[in-house]
Length: 328
Image (tube, rainbow, N blue to C red; front, side, top):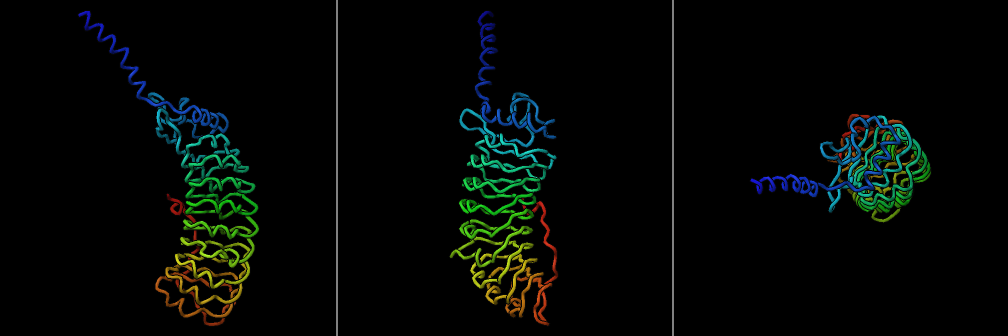
């Protein structure tokens, strides 16, 4: 009996230790960073941020919007998704201490001020979604250091200045959304070196220059499917070299100051489906090849100086951005 009591006592001493060893601790760096954010911003999500450990502690679950993974003997924060909760205030610089982040989604809040230059520390970041905020100033060139980035959403803010050429240093970038800001200057041709880029949306800004300047690099934009340049101050004509963008499906040039004739070579883009030329200063005619294109669903030409008899294709619909466009 004495031996049994000793064994049971030993069991109750050792078993909790075994359980404790089996549970990874959260890296102190990440705990400190998220608690700094929790203390400084007063986010509405805080009612679900219970306890001191963002990855969960004992019976406490991980904080809402926080995803952790185990690396060796520790847990690290790999995703932070806190959106549409009316976060007010400057971009939380402490986020840039979460060095293992692969996704940062703070969209549809009320963040103000600039993106801090320390954003370049997040070397593993693949998705950066800050759209629908009130962020200001210029895009920090340090974003060009995020070599793993595939999705960059900065649309619907108050950014200004030029697009930094450093964005061309993102080899994995597939989606670049900068529409609905106050960007100005010329669009850097270096963006054409983004071999993986599928969608480029620069609509509703203050860009100047010509499309010829944008596509001057040989072999540019090899994977580009959708190009939105609408509602800017672009001038000049449509260069015939644009037909070299063989994967293009949507070309949206509405509401600029472009002029000249529409080159027939554009009709040879194999999968061109939507062509928006309205509200420019184009003239002349439209080649028959556009009307015979097997994929063309819409060609909108209103608000130009085309000769009499030139007709649109399909029924024009205003292109609207929805959350479905951002699913990743």
